Image 1 (spheres, rainbow, N blue to C red):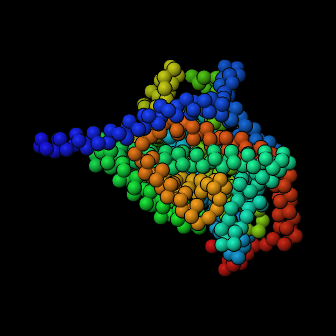
Image 2: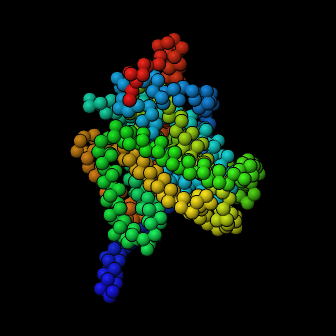
Image 3: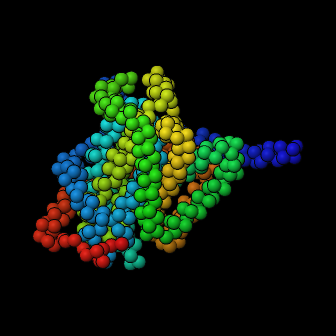
Length: 516
């Protein structure tokens, strides 16, 4: 017994250097992270309510684009569904993946832990009414995705080996060339560096860390078989191996995995939410009443109706990433001759991410109406801190079956893995923009990305993560400015596509010739 105890103590001591290293890095990085976040997330107080300017930038663009294209997210929905089903694209069309695979890859990059934990925090701070404004912001964001993904395909480059480079790395230089070559190149580099930094940390290390944390939680916590620090390293190595096995095959491999993974995780998670709602069916009418009334006449929310609107918009904008410029990278690889066709497909992304997944999470929490959720709201209203959002969601799941947090753990793992592999692709495009495109360069990146997966499983760099979040919205500032400048080009593509549909130039492709 004594020998075993000493061995365990020595093992714990041998891992202390990790904690020390983590504290040192966080301490050194904290002033930088705070300064950058203070600028990017600057929130002036208007009428007693803090309004983050980056949220206004994202939502305002979505509203302008919606007016400019006369509500294309509503009028074009039938075309979107037909395109996703492959009716208008041939297997011989230029590109690497089908419309459905491109959509799956992009959705896998946005549907993640934010849809579970982030929504839990939003409805705790903003009350049920935040759900209503999340839906509104998600519907507006559909038009932003339409614009940026059309541009991502229009200006893409198809290389000799058939691979594609598209998205902001191709349309930003076109948009900014009017300001001179120096300004254009500088803005593209700012975008690329910011995207790479977020991809390495927020899109990789954070996902790996939270996946391990949830796995350890459902296997007995600190006393379970994943309780030791050494198990985090083994878990990280295994996860990195799985990620590497997928990303080494490029976007084609990623698309094949996500096209199967995304529907599976959606059915699993949304099915679980539906069961919780059905198990609390008596609370449904009251919950919908609370969502509507809370949107316009909330109680206990700082800033009242404006406050809850900002909370809902912020959660939606941060979740679906409309306007950030990440999704066009995946959509650019689609097999099509008509750039705007992928714009139609892409507008479904915020609908799936925000209007469906985020709303189902919010409904589950509000309808379950757990004691934990009510206590958390009271704590926040009294000036206390919001709880961990994933716990709010987990407690709602427990109202149907105590074992449902295990299902949540599986959903978290699937969401995190799909986000990991998609952000590997986004980050690699940023890497090759900065360091050049070659087989060696891409291999170095993939190895470095997998190393970050291992590090993320073992360590949580709080300050670095805060900095990475800021970087994601640096991308939005640059990307949306380019989208404004290129709006006439998107309108030309839309008119050309619709004219082709009317004239019969664009017709349904026979099933045997469709992209697959």
